[in-house]
Picture 1 (cartoon, rainbow, N blue to C red):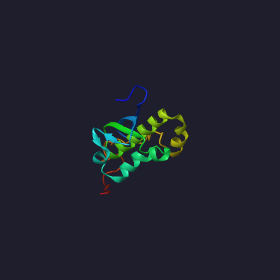
Picture 2: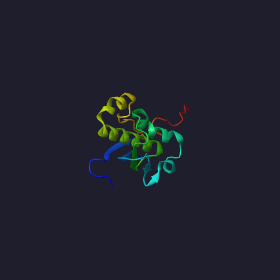
Picture 3: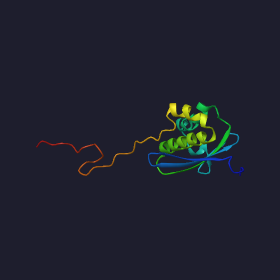
Length: 132
């Protein structure tokens, strides 16, 4: 483990997913829940979402990422990891804040699933109306 002060820890959330992300200066290895990034997030779009903060700040390959993610689905988890990485990058270098803020990577997405209402099959869908 690196000496104290060389790791950058941050939390990211999206929908029901919560990600605890640790950035360690390294070679660009990404581990999510003990598995390599490619094994955990198989869809190419999810991998792109996670790597975006590194591409924008031109730090791709400079940090190893260790992430623990719980809750939600894969899309929510990828968004949570991206927010965690972005926050950790700001802890590493404050000059990245305006770049990441402009791209919206530091904003917690507030959208959540709407609750189901009684007398309806889903949140907004209604049962078929019958006049007679």
